[in-house]
Length: 360
Image 1 (cartoon, helix red, strand yellow):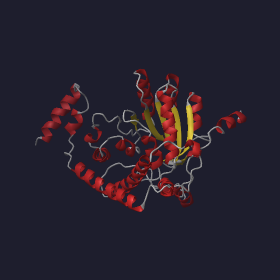
Image 2: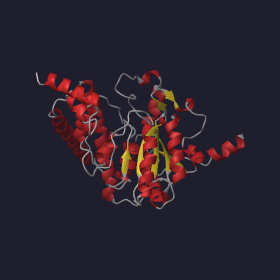
Image 3: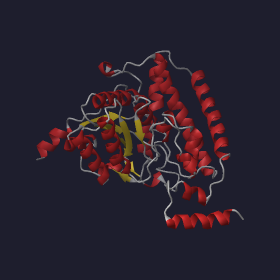
Image 4: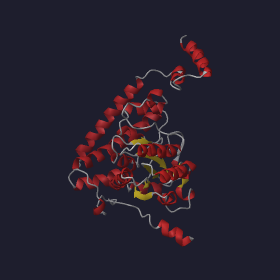
């Protein structure tokens, strides 16, 4: 039995294209991206790092509500989204705001979502995203269904969903993978393994050497990727997408990544379960530093370009917060009115009660 397990686990070596020094170590796997596309990938990662820093500051000022920091996970998040088509669907978890914003959700609505405002969930027509799922792993089953629907309707598109290593310990994770595998759904499952499900080390969550190998039981493709290497993440996602639309079924992608900040800004203290040595080790793998070195060697990136993106991000965030501040104050009647197309009798009674209160 041990030999069988070892034989399976040994199949899942970490896929990588760039070394920590920005050197290409897997030339044959290099994705065919233009210079402009490479620069856009870097722009998005720098933009997101600044956005994250500003969002943390806004949260501490009381100007944002729930927020889950993303610094360290930019390559994992944006490399996957960059490989998608506009008509593909994203079903995010609560940390996966960058992906849905770059897929079309206006930034000010992401801020309203953080504040719990109903307008944050009014997704514009043509933006194929669902709102972030707060229940850990619940979106995995939903993604299996969306991917199955795309296949049934003959769409050459995919559904991608995200969770963390903690989500891979949920029952929904196994059910979703199993359903998608059984019905050949056009679904890509991304597990961003940042090593701590809130505070529990991944080694204490599962005896499996990798999360990627869990694909074997579902009969689907699985791959473990260096999640700090944006080119490797992009290439793995692109291949998974091509497999799905060709009718070859779903893929489980495990990205090995790291979040520098707390799990969320709601009171988590990562110093209680992470060491400074571990933080320092992962900061040496920083996705922005690695990709910056790669681009600079190709004369595709400069300090001036980066500073321009930093200023652009700051201005966009300032404008988005101002627009979010201008949203109408949320009322109880708003929540009741948006709950059902036709209100049941008990909510009709409550609507009358709160309408009277709010008119005073």
